[in-house]
Image (tube, rainbow, N blue to C red; front, side, top):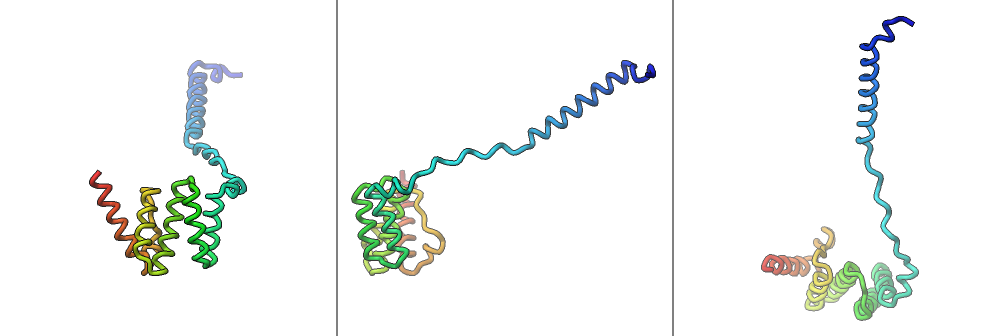
Length: 154
Protein backbone atom coordinates (compact mmCIF):
# COMPACT_ATOMS: atom_id res chain seq x y z
CA UNK A 1 0.00 0.00 0.00
CA UNK A 2 1.26 3.45 -0.83
CA UNK A 3 2.49 5.83 1.85
CA UNK A 4 -0.18 8.27 0.69
CA UNK A 5 -2.97 6.12 2.25
CA UNK A 6 -1.03 5.90 5.51
CA UNK A 7 -0.39 9.62 5.77
CA UNK A 8 -1.54 11.34 8.94
CA UNK A 9 -3.41 13.92 6.91
CA UNK A 10 -5.50 11.29 5.14
CA UNK A 11 -6.19 9.50 8.44
CA UNK A 12 -7.38 12.78 9.91
CA UNK A 13 -9.58 13.42 6.88
CA UNK A 14 -11.09 9.93 7.12
CA UNK A 15 -11.68 10.41 10.83
CA UNK A 16 -13.37 13.80 10.24
CA UNK A 17 -15.50 12.38 7.41
CA UNK A 18 -16.59 9.49 9.64
CA UNK A 19 -17.39 11.87 12.49
CA UNK A 20 -19.36 14.13 10.15
CA UNK A 21 -21.28 11.17 8.74
CA UNK A 22 -22.11 9.95 12.25
CA UNK A 23 -23.21 13.46 13.19
CA UNK A 24 -25.48 13.69 10.17
CA UNK A 25 -26.95 10.25 10.78
CA UNK A 26 -27.32 10.99 14.46
CA UNK A 27 -29.10 14.24 13.62
CA UNK A 28 -31.60 12.31 11.52
CA UNK A 29 -32.56 10.39 14.59
CA UNK A 30 -33.51 13.68 16.25
CA UNK A 31 -35.96 14.38 13.44
CA UNK A 32 -37.92 11.18 13.98
CA UNK A 33 -41.28 11.91 15.59
CA UNK A 34 -41.71 10.77 19.17
CA UNK A 35 -43.67 7.59 19.67
CA UNK A 36 -47.42 8.06 20.15
CA UNK A 37 -48.67 8.22 23.73
CA UNK A 38 -50.12 5.04 25.14
CA UNK A 39 -53.87 4.70 24.71
CA UNK A 40 -56.05 5.96 27.52
CA UNK A 41 -57.34 3.27 29.82
CA UNK A 42 -60.57 1.91 28.48
CA UNK A 43 -63.81 1.85 30.38
CA UNK A 44 -65.87 -1.28 30.14
CA UNK A 45 -69.35 -0.53 28.82
CA UNK A 46 -70.58 -3.68 30.54
CA UNK A 47 -69.32 -2.36 33.88
CA UNK A 48 -70.87 1.04 33.23
CA UNK A 49 -74.16 -0.60 32.33
CA UNK A 50 -74.10 -2.39 35.68
CA UNK A 51 -74.23 1.02 37.40
CA UNK A 52 -77.83 2.27 37.68
CA UNK A 53 -77.14 5.93 36.87
CA UNK A 54 -74.97 5.12 33.86
CA UNK A 55 -77.48 2.52 32.62
CA UNK A 56 -80.25 5.11 32.84
CA UNK A 57 -78.10 7.62 30.92
CA UNK A 58 -77.30 5.09 28.17
CA UNK A 59 -80.97 4.15 27.89
CA UNK A 60 -81.92 7.83 27.82
CA UNK A 61 -79.57 8.40 24.90
CA UNK A 62 -80.99 5.39 23.09
CA UNK A 63 -84.59 6.51 23.62
CA UNK A 64 -83.73 10.05 22.55
CA UNK A 65 -82.10 8.83 19.33
CA UNK A 66 -85.17 6.64 18.68
CA UNK A 67 -87.48 9.66 19.06
CA UNK A 68 -89.02 8.34 22.28
CA UNK A 69 -88.60 11.66 24.08
CA UNK A 70 -90.91 11.01 27.03
CA UNK A 71 -89.04 7.80 27.87
CA UNK A 72 -85.72 9.55 27.31
CA UNK A 73 -86.73 12.32 29.71
CA UNK A 74 -87.55 9.79 32.43
CA UNK A 75 -84.20 8.05 31.94
CA UNK A 76 -82.13 11.28 31.96
CA UNK A 77 -83.86 12.44 35.15
CA UNK A 78 -83.27 9.02 36.72
CA UNK A 79 -79.59 9.09 35.73
CA UNK A 80 -79.12 12.46 37.41
CA UNK A 81 -81.11 11.46 40.50
CA UNK A 82 -79.10 8.25 40.90
CA UNK A 83 -75.79 10.11 40.86
CA UNK A 84 -74.41 10.06 37.33
CA UNK A 85 -70.68 10.35 38.02
CA UNK A 86 -69.09 11.93 34.97
CA UNK A 87 -69.52 15.71 34.70
CA UNK A 88 -69.60 15.57 30.92
CA UNK A 89 -72.36 12.95 31.06
CA UNK A 90 -74.25 15.12 33.56
CA UNK A 91 -74.02 18.06 31.15
CA UNK A 92 -75.16 15.85 28.26
CA UNK A 93 -78.14 14.55 30.24
CA UNK A 94 -79.15 18.11 31.10
CA UNK A 95 -78.62 19.21 27.50
CA UNK A 96 -81.05 16.56 26.28
CA UNK A 97 -83.51 17.47 29.03
CA UNK A 98 -83.29 21.07 27.79
CA UNK A 99 -83.94 19.99 24.21
CA UNK A 100 -86.97 17.96 25.28
CA UNK A 101 -88.35 20.76 27.46
CA UNK A 102 -87.96 23.31 24.67
CA UNK A 103 -89.56 20.94 22.15
CA UNK A 104 -92.55 20.49 24.47
CA UNK A 105 -92.93 24.27 25.03
CA UNK A 106 -91.60 24.30 28.59
CA UNK A 107 -89.17 27.24 28.36
CA UNK A 108 -88.55 27.56 32.11
CA UNK A 109 -87.51 23.89 32.33
CA UNK A 110 -85.41 24.30 29.18
CA UNK A 111 -83.54 27.23 30.70
CA UNK A 112 -83.06 25.41 34.02
CA UNK A 113 -81.68 22.35 32.26
CA UNK A 114 -79.16 24.47 30.33
CA UNK A 115 -78.10 26.13 33.60
CA UNK A 116 -77.65 22.69 35.16
CA UNK A 117 -75.53 21.63 32.16
CA UNK A 118 -73.23 24.63 32.72
CA UNK A 119 -73.11 23.88 36.46
CA UNK A 120 -72.02 20.31 35.70
CA UNK A 121 -69.43 21.36 33.12
CA UNK A 122 -68.39 25.03 32.89
CA UNK A 123 -66.97 24.31 29.41
CA UNK A 124 -70.32 22.99 28.18
CA UNK A 125 -71.07 24.04 24.60
CA UNK A 126 -73.56 23.14 21.93
CA UNK A 127 -72.47 22.39 18.39
CA UNK A 128 -73.09 25.07 15.76
CA UNK A 129 -76.01 23.05 14.41
CA UNK A 130 -77.55 22.76 17.89
CA UNK A 131 -77.11 26.50 18.56
CA UNK A 132 -78.88 27.19 15.27
CA UNK A 133 -81.98 25.20 16.26
CA UNK A 134 -85.01 27.51 16.38
CA UNK A 135 -86.46 26.06 19.59
CA UNK A 136 -83.52 25.73 21.97
CA UNK A 137 -80.84 27.78 20.22
CA UNK A 138 -82.09 31.16 21.53
CA UNK A 139 -82.56 29.81 25.06
CA UNK A 140 -79.05 28.32 25.08
CA UNK A 141 -77.55 31.54 23.67
CA UNK A 142 -79.18 33.61 26.43
CA UNK A 143 -78.07 31.22 29.22
CA UNK A 144 -74.55 30.96 27.77
CA UNK A 145 -74.27 34.76 27.68
CA UNK A 146 -75.38 34.94 31.33
CA UNK A 147 -72.80 32.27 32.22
CA UNK A 148 -70.08 34.23 30.43
CA UNK A 149 -71.02 37.43 32.30
CA UNK A 150 -70.99 35.56 35.61
CA UNK A 151 -67.56 34.08 34.86
CA UNK A 152 -66.12 37.54 34.14
CA UNK A 153 -67.34 38.88 37.51
CA UNK A 154 -65.47 36.21 39.47
